[in-house]
Image (cartoon, rainbow, N blue to C red; front, side):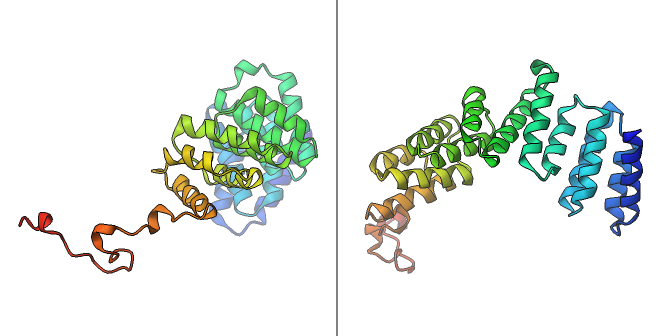
Length: 252
């Protein structure tokens, strides 16, 4: 009965949407609700509504999908993305993990749920619990590394934040913007840049790492690599003037 009432509410809300494409996406989501083979169409309809600014519609659609298939991680994730209060996210994910066998959930979905739960803990002031589940699970998602580094930094443990980002850098040879942000703030808190310069120097082919690397060079009073004068060009390249080609290049 509750699901029928919610479906009727979603249909009423859709009728007031002017965007024809949005109405079509939500209509498909309602049509395929309960069809396991079409769950991605349902999840897409929820995401489209949320991203299109129809938050209440997305929330009702997500609740409807989750009520009909409470053990589906995709619908739980969409519900968490649509919920307005972090304690609700914590409650929903906790209930799911107590009810559903961990091994039945694909790894990527498990990791996304771990990150969402840790973020919920952070936003409800339970930072130590957020750190604990991230440390135990060590999700491979970039968002998980970013969040753990952030929580370490905000908990007054910047060295742990740098360690977790360095470990990710050694594994993937690149950093996300979020990882670079928390690494830079942690390095500023520690105040010891020389070791960072040595570590980052090995990975500066990555554009994000290169920007961070040169920022640290400036903080240490060094000339960033990109601003160093090419001595062979006699400083011309530094000034933006095309350098004369030497005799070897001309074949003389």
